[in-house]
Amino acid sequence: MAGILAWFWNERFWLPHNVTWADLKNTDEATFPQAEDLYVACPLAFCIFMIRLVFERFIARPCALGLKIQANGPQKAQPNAILEKVFTAITKHPDEKRLEGLSKQLDWDVRTIQRWFRQRRNQEKPSTLTTWLWNTRECWYNYPYQPLTVDIHYYYILELSFYLSLLFSQFTDIRRKDFLIMFLHHLATITLITFSYVNNMARVGTLVMCLHDAADVLMEVAKMANYAKCQRLCNLLFVMFAMVFISSRLGVYPVWILNTTLFESWEIVGPYPSWWVFNLLLILLQFLHSFWSYLIVKIACRAISRGKVSKDDRSDIESSSDEDNGPPPAPVQKHYNSTTNGTNKAHGTNGYLSAGAPCPDEH
Image (tube, rainbow, N blue to C red; front, side):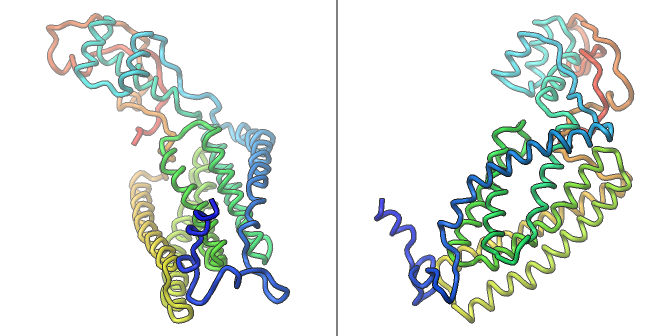
């Protein structure tokens, strides 16, 4: 084990030339980041998680109910053993051929079966209240980030604790559509925070984290305003978020931070293996910033055309065009007729399992 650790923490990979781990030990004259400083992040992350639960129960939830945010989830699909077996064991999105087979088997029209599968998919999605609580949590997580102390050691530990808490929360909450993406994001962030701290890159790491946290609060508050149906406030916050995001990540980040880590550090310490790794990751991050900025501009253009900002599509429930036109008729069972034309076979002619609330289509 000692041999593996010695190989992993090879000085010639992690440190500049003529610098050793012994040079980074604390002395009376200087203090350096130490790996053992991060041990406290795990218990602190658990404390943050428990505080978040108290915050949601006694502060965020009453506020949401006071704003009359919908607490009930999507309407449940009518119990049916055959369709449930297909849904859980075969597919959640049956094709036309399977729909026709189920229509014959159940003596239901195709449209009714399509509606059942749509409602069954929606049944696994959270209510608007739950989504609003998610946004309050992320807003709450993103706020204590800005350095509460000038000591960047404490700031790093606090940031690491928050991301550990977020990672843990993913396994205790209802899963979103972007579960895997966010899991990898949190895991990569925790890895970068840890290694940049141990490698004595805490100063540039602090700047990167502060820069990224600056716009996040505005985004989460904008979502909260959207779910609370405060559309003007939502639009205003989204504009502020877009301005801060684009100016910080397409302006400050490349001009200030990347310029320092790529060019100024080259002149001061010169390149070494881990220097290349961290700078390549920072450059990759800049490409992501450009892509995300494109998406923000795209959302802004769509919002201008629609007159409002859309919901977070990670948790929206599905709907169909006919649901948006008004309330559906009462549940009807219709015998499948093999003589009907192709259009009626594929789409059905009438009958719904139950009414569904109008909402944006799932993307």
